Amino acid sequence: MTEVTDKVERAIARFDRVTRQLDQRDGPARAAARRERERLNAGLGRTFVKVAGAIVLIWLATLVIGFIQPIGMFGFLAALVATVAVAGILLARGSRQAISPPAPSADLPNREMVDRFDSYLYRVRRALPAPAQAQLDSINAVLPSLRQTLERVDTLDPQAQDARRLMSVHLPGLIERYANVPAAYRNEQDGEGKTVDERLVESLAAGRAALAEVSEQLARADMAAFETQGRFIKSRYGDNPQLEGPADRPDQGSTESEDASST
Image (cartoon, rainbow, N blue to C red; front, side, top):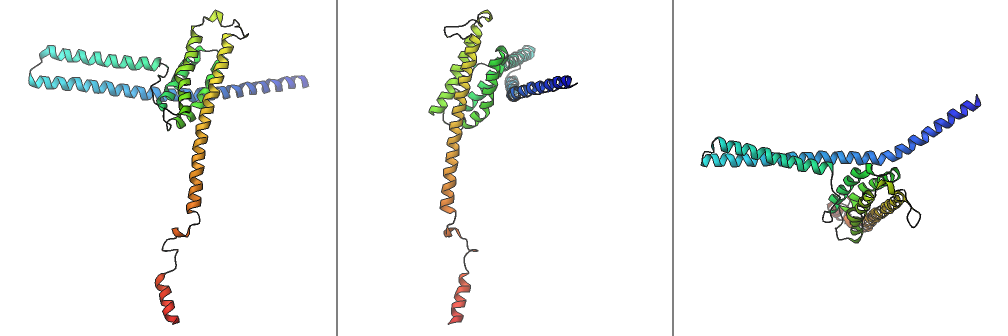
């Protein structure tokens, strides 16, 4: 009976450990999926706005031309064909960007670069091995705070430049070069005794640490600026009698009347 109980307890403990690990791993992945859905919905809305604007322009031009000179059936059909063609092109372009967003380009602003990099990692995640996916999840967990700090920093800031190079050049290049290696050769060891998968995981971990360091340094700079501002306000206005309003000062008229009565 005791042996069975021990087995049950070990099985429950193992189940709890596995589910806890899955929850920790799936937390950033679920957050990344939620952000990707929000971006897709926003992109879909922008695509429909573009399509609607193009259709309105086409038919406004058709009406203007029709008032100047009758367009006839052929003109109406030409406007209809132009509407379908433009709408198809815009919808195809929007769907292509939504299905396979490219890696962030180097000329994007900081905020858009972080969003594009977040979407890029979400799309390439399934093509990587499980240990690399865990590293991508760790990178995804850093991106929201990094985005919040980078969007207030100039693109030429040295720390911002380091993060931008990682997101637009180094990490996407690493993933693309890994994808070019045939699957049959990914378990072969290199000169340092490491496989392609192990090298990928190590490189992603180094990139995650670098992005986390940039995010922490920028956040600490904001904290230091906030602390300095708070100390200044406290020293300047904390116990300053000059800030006493009329209600805090003794009434001048009552003081004069008291002096007159005393004389």
